Length: 181
Image (cartoon, rainbow, N blue to C red):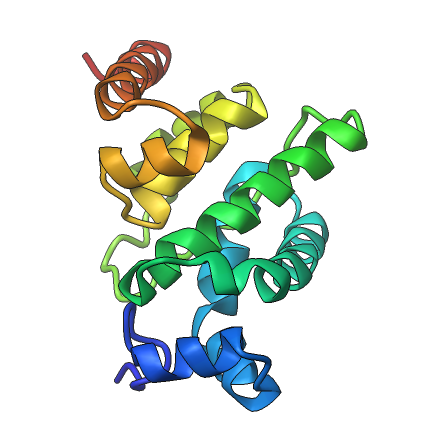
């Protein structure tokens, strides 16, 4: 069961406003509710669990400083995940690391136990590893964080149609590479 704090959008506007005004307890509640989402997106962008944790951690001071500028408290989750994704991309660039360490794919609740059924996942993961960090961020924001094109556009400084176009090309390229035409 998902707790109230971990459900997307579960943080009331009053908590966001209190945190923006300097209430550390309110901010701690925001951190508890959204940290794991931020780390998951950073993991896709970085491909390294430790680097993903570093990116999420470095995003929190930025969020603390800039929280007062958030116009709509209902946009807190997309805004936080965007900050974390940007930090992850910067860490990848700073460390000149454009390779990805393999991530474990969780097969929770699945009846697929035959490794042969997972070969497509391995091919897809290998193809995603070869993508630049910016493309991995785009895929992570869409398919891991569940952002729509307009939210991704705001996060990355692109138009909604530009996001849809890039995603379409990326998905098409990945389908070609893994032979899923």
